[in-house]
Length: 111
Image (tube, rainbow, N blue to C red; front, side):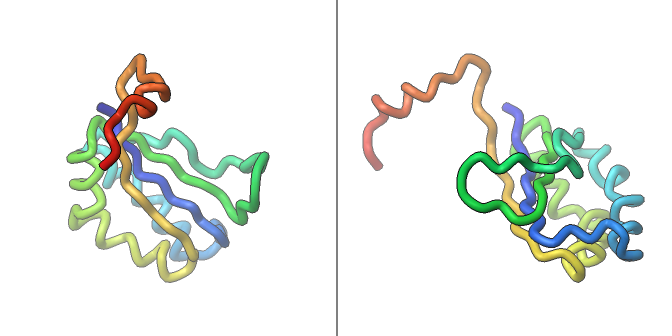
C-alpha cells in the first residue's frame, strides 16, 4: 500500500544556499526507496483554517520504504541543510487501499 512522507514547511526559503544544495541532492536519496514527489513547491489553496507556508508530499511503495528513506544515511546527511533553515513538521503515513470507503470507519469497533 502506498505510503507518504508529508512535510508542512512554514517558512520555505528555496533561495537559501543550503536549501538549494538540499534540493539538488534529495532526488538521489529517494531513488533507492522508490520515492517520488507527488506535491512539491505548489501554492496551497486554503479552504478551511490557517495554513502558513507550503506542503511537500513524497509517495513511497509502502511504509517500510518511507521509513527506510528517512532513516537512510544519505538522507540524514542532507536533512540539516533543510531543517537548519526551514521551520516545519514532517510525518510518515500509510495511504489507503484502492476502493477504500470512509464509511468503513463507522462500523469499526472503538479502541
